[in-house]
Amino acid sequence: MYVWDLGGQERLRTSWATYYRGTNAVIAVIDSSDRARISIMKDELFRLLGHEDLQHSVILVFANKQDIKDAMTPAEITDALSLHSIKDHDWHIQACSALSGEGLYDGLGWIAGRVTGKA
Image (tube, rainbow, N blue to C red; front, side):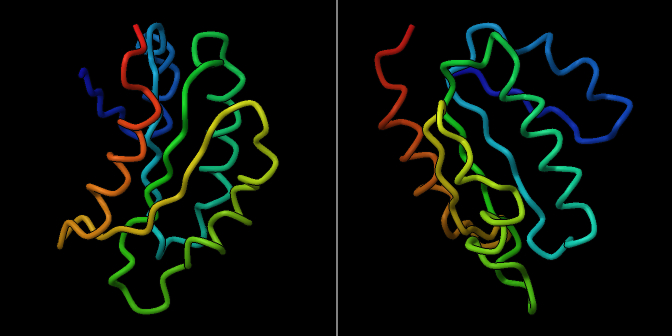
């Protein structure tokens, strides 16, 4: 398994496509407490999904920082990102906390169950 951590800063986004070829899964990590930037993530996610090299990739959305008071729920994030409108990719949203590790193995297990054996 190869994993790339592609930073979210705007100036880095133009280089993301360099890493798309051969990608079986995309993991988007959402800061569930950052309501102000969720629309930016939606735009970037749909831009990713439109790329030819990602047409067969599955999408995992980690709803991180669920341990923070007033964090958006996975259902709120699903609506904000319009995930139900994604019809040509398998997708899953997983509540998690990177601090405690809760939910991380569940999300990665979901990916493993869908990409095992893909070249």
